Length: 190
Image: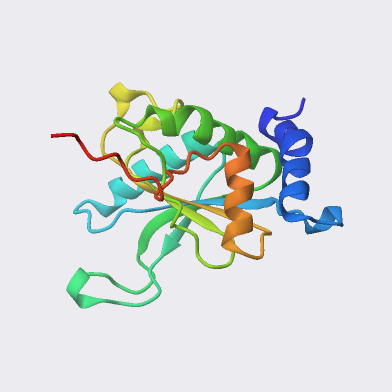
């Protein structure tokens, strides 16, 4: 059983990108390589409990066991010691990646209150896109009555695109709801 978003990529996105950018070789067409979901507990007072909650929520959302991340150096102003556990991350590839992207694009993002699309300016210059999610309640796997603390995530979509324009075309064709900043709202008549 194939993931619906992967079928859409092979049947609709590849021909559309090939025509739009004039690729002559199938291997030139950009694709999503991996998705990295990262969370940090920040300056929580009860760091062990906060980290456990973050790890549990990340595991529930992605279906994979997260890797705990540690601080690289000590920063006294933040009461941070070297090698102190400060977050967790998961790297998704293949089938799991497409399943997560499909849930993110079609179910989770539209669930955000007053959602008008995501910024098209969050590309890194190398064709990768990072999206911040304020809390985990937008994901369908999370039971709202069991949330103990809000956990925010950074979702980084790593593509094989060489430019941000190619990556935006790829993600746009996959259904990523970018806002069109060029269109300005019409002025109200007085």
